[in-house]
Length: 240
Image (cartoon, rainbow, N blue to C red; front, top):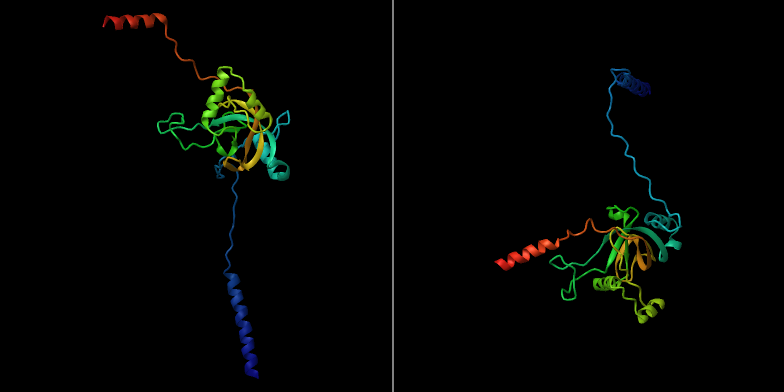
């Protein structure tokens, strides 16, 4: 019995000594802060100043591209798959090209996408995430070419076409969807259009539009040729 008590006391004393040694070996970190001219300076990059997002609506209540998507995330039941009006700039126009880089014709039989444009809140926008696709206003590029030609020649829409448009069986093909134009587009705000084109962030399936500001003219006019220059070349050719 006495031996067992001595064993217990020995164990307790050994544990106490071990704890004492462990405490004495504990390390401490002393932090010294230097101030004044001898203090070390850390050069950190400045926090970037991000531009504020566009407003949700324009002054006339029409949505911006940012606005309609922003509101759709908060009120999906009243935004998705409903007709909305969106105000923006045309920043990209899809035109089907053949292997030679020229506009496709029926003879080329190109595997072209459905005609579409992209609009954005900024005329110079190049970030695809901030663009919105507008589609459903034509099936082939030739329809747009015909609409442009009819507008250029001041040909009115036929009575039959007007009846079909009024009945909702056809849509007027836009002739002024050019890069740089400022437009208000009315259409179904959806993720997938009836022609198969889709975008998870939302696109507009065209119904109608209003051009606020037409696209700017080309950078410069073609150089004119003076009549006397033509006359001189003609004489030279006759001489030879």
